[in-house]
Length: 220
Image (cartoon, rainbow, N blue to C red):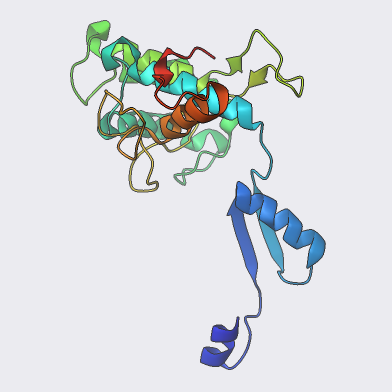
């Protein structure tokens, strides 16, 4: 604010704050303690079931990397799926604007989207389609995690990712994708799927406390 005043000789007429995750928690504190600081704050994902999220990411990683990586998707295949979802769901809200606004309606079109990108016969035929194991990965990522036991907070379910309803997992609008290789590093690093990095750390340092464990062997 000091720099803005020095440059323009006046403060901004309106100020807004847009944040997610830990930033969302910061923003709730900001709102309660200093409500006059901003004209508006967009609070995104300020709370979450952390154990459920990390276990869900273990499921995601196992879908990608088990079976010798048959279910792994590179950036081209991931963008192929995203474009198919956009083509199917963009206009469900009545407007063609490159934004999927009716997420619930889009989910009802999931089977149609998957059929449209399936490789003939289900075998991998390159980046123009998805094989059956790759489609199984997408279904695993989109499906909720259902546990056969209760977490400490009484929860046994964690929602899946909206990969079939508009969530972006690769391409120019995110720095995250499913990594560079169908064989992950141990420990996982920046070349692996972003979600798997956190899952691997969760298994190693929180659940088992065995830093050398192969986290793919851990079944949530």
